[in-house]
Length: 302
Ligand code: ATP
Ligand code: MG
Image (tube, rainbow, N blue to C red; front, side, top):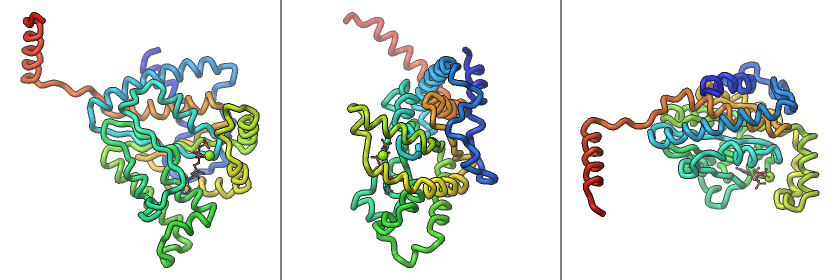
């Protein structure tokens, strides 16, 4: 399968889930069980395509690293058990770990709470030449913090600044931050792995029944299911307010892991293929130096 052919096939999977504007966006229009044009009988074809996509991704990452101009920031958001960890593991399985940085954001520490909310995320923005992954991100500041008011209370904000506009203001700051990153050559892609409440229950029960998955289970996750609708509303608004051409959202159906992985890998491959990635070229003087070094090595006796 040639690269153009891979890109062509990938495009069909990715396009329906790519959100570049909040206008007319409705989260409820996207079915978590969707598998696009592929039925589960065609899973093997999907796996082959995923494999090719992963290989292509590794090649492009090598160039991204060598060229040292662009950076990629991949943001993963989801309800629990939607498959963030597994998706990151599979999609990035071919890339060189040296060029990749993963950050998993948990509840903030005392030190982090003593700063503006973007502080801890901003410090982790990837360097040029790297792919940075945020496993949860600053979007938690308008998700968990919005759904559970007691979390906001811990943030030590001056009370006069906590108004009914706070979520709108945070979302507008996020959109500006992403524009700033885009203008600096940090390519931002945001993934919402959209799992259904029913599939989440199934996966929680599986975690409970398999000893090797017990560590992944937290009773608090079950309590959070009560706030499902509040989370969906918060996601709806977050995605609609921050989807843009330079920092698109991908609302990825997540009830079928094989399909989720294909769409995520596809979105990354498609975006990277559009960057002007190339290995740095060597000028004439440097070529002469390399030739001289080669000749010297050939002449040496040891
Ligand atoms: P898994 O799917 O394996 O459970 P996870 O990303 O949920 O992975 P956990 O360690 O279970 O990882 O949970 C991280 C927790 O940190 C989440 O409950 C999330 O809501 C919380 N969190 C992240 N950022 C913030 C924040 N800014 N304020 C408060 N809580 C946060
Ligand atoms: Mg969790």
